[in-house]
Image (cartoon, rainbow, N blue to C red):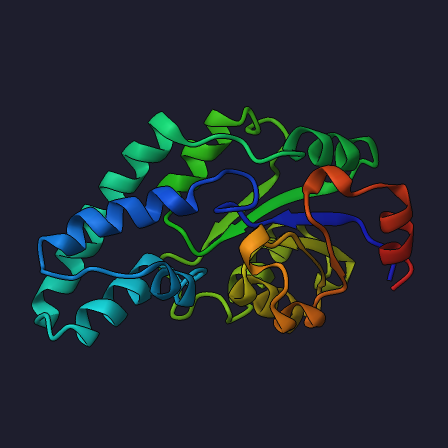
Length: 221
């Protein structure tokens, strides 16, 4: 199907916020006596904060009564760090201009809180070009469930089959494919060799590398 919309994940794709989420989690988890390795953080990359917190607190025998409190403290600290320290990922201006020139509808779909969407739209100057933004924060299921992507396509008033999605996590890629969307992945360098990326329609090392040849290939799928 001819494509008419593009949907972007946020964390790790448009903005380098993943390390800052980990930094915030480390600070709060430390107060519960929890120290996670880089491999453990990588294992839960792409989960929303609710599942992330519940998983690691449960693993470390922390009472469930602490889950909501710990999650909110991590969110508050992470948003503060992202506002002060996060940088735009390479190629964001290029990719936004590319699809604006093609008059594509542009959306955001994330497992992160709604507050992050608003922060990123303001920080990256995207408020005028984003026509729909959806968070899985309050959905029954987050990525890898496709609902947040289906909701975003509906908000853009286009078929999921007409969407190209850009993702950097395995969970996000699986969500996009489950929604029957075309998916481009831009994994971090340390995760780029994972075999899972074979599910995607295209893998790039940077958003900056996306061009007309890639688009023409995807637009015919």
